[in-house]
Length: 451
Ligand code: GUN
Ligand code: FE
Image (cartoon, rainbow, N blue to C red):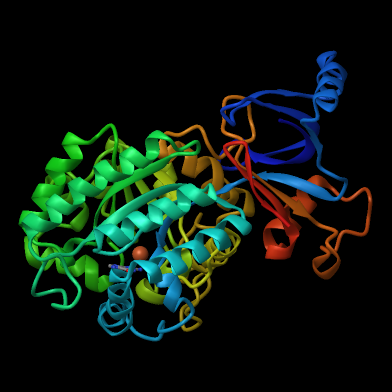
């Protein structure tokens, strides 16, 4: 495949590079083999050859290429309750809405219906890689991995572990710590087998829901699995998510949950830790030293934490940071929503919102995220955190890309001046694009959406 087009890719936390009529040469494994710029002597040769071979695609004027987005925190079964129930605090919401919803995924045909719909929706809104929590059911969780594989999305999938009889209802939990560990190990091997014939990558994830849901025995056992399967499996959980959850770990252990996850062997370079709103300086050092990623979920944080994670501070401390939708704790299923919310929330953190305090006392200096910063988190930052060659439109990376048509009739973006700066077009796309504007999506060189 050879694609000619203009578009945007993140260079760094702050910089976005605009490219114009670049020629992307994509190999049989869906990797960008090289990028040739107009003016290069090979440009016309390669373009003509591709046309003759019938593998040439040109992205039309008014349409732009972006890297596919990487959503590192998604509760797939909660798609069935998305948009509801967010007027309750986390600990009430779980028991009142979420556990009843997730318990329905014992039925594999229901799992098939919901998971297929969600994966399709995410692909059609530009999310080419996702890290998913399924449910406690091993078989239902495998349905999610199979759907992602079939529909062509790169996915990290976890069977949720929640074995504590005190914290979880009898109708929805693992039968015991031993059963949770055994089922997780089986799941890891089943997903690894699926991954053997996957083009884009389907990876198993060891997934203790969060410390309050699990017994020490389960956490310990999962930590041992994490060590044994470190080259195959990722690890994910919630960490320092709300005052309640953050305080819970201190009550149970006298330490932060971040510290305890490390103690259980669940805090490594392969760990994907959702939220991390309240890490201490010591916790932040642990992130930087291990290379674990903090997944910023700004919309969910508005509801369950009522707080804003200081992302610049994390990045300055050398932490990996990525972006997550946290469906359904955040109701927006696409990362455009998370990008926008990350910027909005950070602005409120910067200036402060309590008008009873004086300006200057209200906010936290140097907190504001630019659209460029948020775009980096949604693309290159996510890729770096997973240590996978994804998130950039550059040689050596997977061809995971989305085409944004700014001229689509029912969703035309307000671009009227032909000499409009590229940076303005980029900002209009990130702030204003709706699903109709996203016309083509590729994952690992495979066209998975064409509308
Ligand atoms: N903490 C434990 N479980 C959950 C969940 O399902 N969603 C969110 N946002 N936080 C959690
Ligand atoms: Fe979550």
